[in-house]
Image (tube, rainbow, N blue to C red; front, side, top):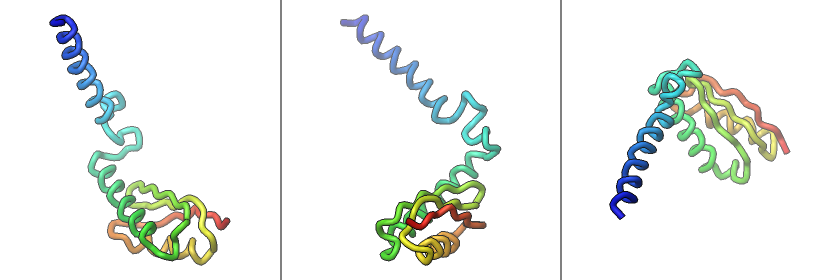
Length: 111
């Protein structure tokens, strides 16, 4: 039983090290390095995306819309489908009103 326990502990330690390297992007020079963004920039962009997404999801008129939000260096991109051109414009306006958003790019389609 002791050899099995040693194998289990050793495996967990080794995998734990791999997991941290993968999460931090160690194999690629750091998180966001392939995009030329620092961890701070990636974190800010993720926070902006979350705030925009929350604003869109909580809007009564946009309910049922399928909108995906991505952010890179403060530029928010909206993609997906909405029921009308007016709702696409509303989504852009709501996103533009979120703190930290520099610009909004719309790839929204009307279904």
